[in-house]
Length: 328
Image (cartoon, rainbow, N blue to C red; front, side, top):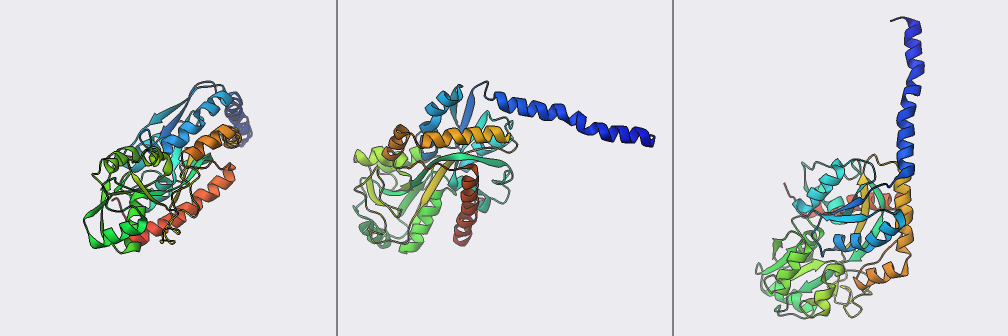
């Protein structure tokens, strides 16, 4: 190859790339032209499902395309997360990510097939939620202090449910057992809804979960709300004391549910989605529905959500490692 030919090829390389860049920009400008799917890593009825459904109608109207939910529970969220990571980075597949999976799984699984920073892009905040400690109707305790005394008097006989091995509910139960000095047995389920069914049925004594998944059962008297594991009371459960008010100030558990996309989605699409989500977070109807479900909507920019998620990865990871919780 002559020097002249080589120089001509090199000079022509940027021109060859222009059609590709132009197609990407054109695709982002015309997006969306077909329905958008939100993958949810839990069954209907849980906190992530509640957060996704809170925004579906508004996003459908704002984007002019149908937004549908695809519940894919299992493997501690990894089934839905892997599907999102492997999807085309075109803005038509989103993930309603749960902070327990996003920040917890990397600390508990050595052979995880996805990385929260490398493989997922933050899009916008869905809801933020505290956790409520609920007991079975046949639990011989009506307050948190009564439960602590009962658990201490019955080491190894008290069961606590979770939405799966390594979930925030699992971590919360282990941390609670350590803080109150009582041995408890972990019973994992595939999501919050089946766990709550067994708590309401008296087959498991305790569950620590987001209010959105339990508020109906609490208000109906089917489970007992012992305390909110948060610094403030929940607007949806104003009569339930905080753990500090109930005598256990060091025990707080908060979670978030946020929209993520696979890496590589064009920035203009992410920014449009983020703008629409922030608008919906200010909508009075959305805010009211969130509060009725025991959660809050907090508008966040992409950068703000990115900083929060990375901070959670470090902080929750430290808790998991100190408690020696693994899923391998």
